[in-house]
Image 1 (cartoon, one colour):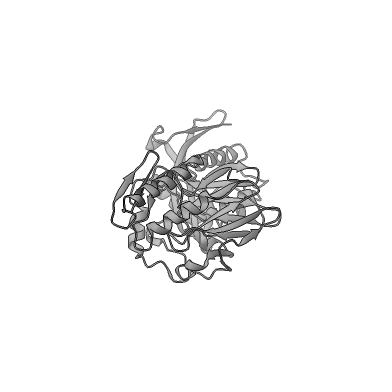
Image 2: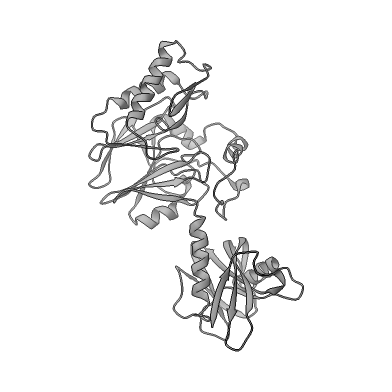
Length: 396
């Protein structure tokens, strides 16, 4: 038996006789067991006469898993050649199941949830190949990019969005610390759990929507005292404005199949700990110092790991446009905060929340000088406009 995989569009529609649906529910792969077999198979089945192939996939998924609410997308086509027979062609789909109902009384007796492949397969020559290709497809379209800073430190980045957001995972001996949770477009907890099984503390650099998007996925949230009310009650920006901001520019990666902008919500909740300036967070053989750096927002913080020399700068320092023109920003405080962190000793690396992750420490001093130049011109006040420099802009 020979199984071949084809890109979509190569196999003619009339040749497609089967639909196979690799699906996940609750982050587990869904497999079906026929009433007359003791083996597992990927849900799927025959295309009925004059049936559109995408409808075949939807029907088979419902009949073989009891799926009620799901998103499904085609991945590739395939063929199976058995000895002495012509090739049979089918289409492979990936489905994210949000809700399972009662299993219909058809051919399938039960479903099972597995991390990958079950041991006993109905079609062991076919199913591993199909699953491998779906996994490859999913990997190529992964929303998050994991970038290793060192063996216990990772950036979890969202390059598919125009803001190019970075969250950071720091793994200690006893706990792990996640600095921000990103946009909320993909499930950042799944990425974190690929890297550690330690309890997670989330530290919020500031309560803007692009930094708290995944807060709802975690139980232990820390926030600076000046933004506790924002975390509890919201920042006061209408949700339709935030949604428009998310969708403002085209995405350069495929959105996660489970994402729906209509369902997008901003986290509100009670912090487990309220932070103060110079607080120390100890996660076991790693200590982080909280540095209050208002200006971009009232409770904005940077986080300094003195032993490694890592300074996590949030929205205070990065390559791109620095914002101090919103009503809740303060350009004078922004300048003071840049001055404050530029006096820190032992900085080995700056780790920003946006855009290029590899920035020079000299960028911080360039930004410091730029704010001083603006101040000297008596323009360090809102409404002064946009100031262009080599690697950054300041919008006041």
